[in-house]
Length: 281
View (cartoon, one colour):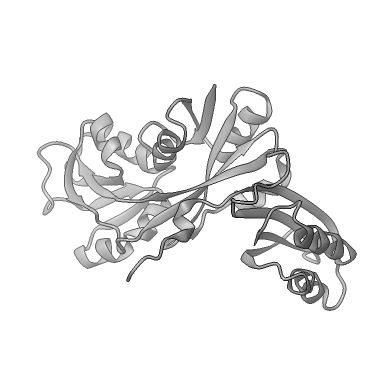
């Protein structure tokens, strides 16, 4: 069995795969679209997808891709992110002029780079940036990536834990071709993810969200984006507490159908233990 991820060996998605499913073969893919396609086609069993970071915000493209793929969310994972500043052996911090990394990683280290006058340059992912630096052999450029990437591409570390905040964390979702089935475990706290497209009528969003309020269903996430070519239909990615087969959630889902053109439940999955932690500033 295997789990697909975007990037190359040493990427944070690769580390998430190893943390959640160390028993599975981790399969690298060039893009998020490739990850979805390979699992949908049966070339992989699971997909590991980053969805948001508490410093850099949501991962671009994911919310646009989720409505158009056939997979189901079956789990979530919160990955602590500890970035390293990597360069070729012999390079010095004083000689470093620019660093490559994924835009999310650059955003997470923005203050660190700005304070030191280092130019940020975007790359497809963190591990690819490390690989590029190793291949070029230029001591004036570096990469922001994981310690594993440094080991794999034989780079030296010029700085550890360089993220702007020590509680830097990326949330991943795990997707599969089949949804979690069966009744909810009464001893487990769940999250249900869905997306819907509103009808273009007054107060549609107010009434749709009211369906959750009147059924005492707590929203934990609400993301909006335009979902039509005429800019007249808004789409929303929503996460709520509870299982889709819980009576309150079922009632809320039935009610929002009156105010939406499309509703799709992406999956119900157990809340990760990270949600129960309280991070001190």
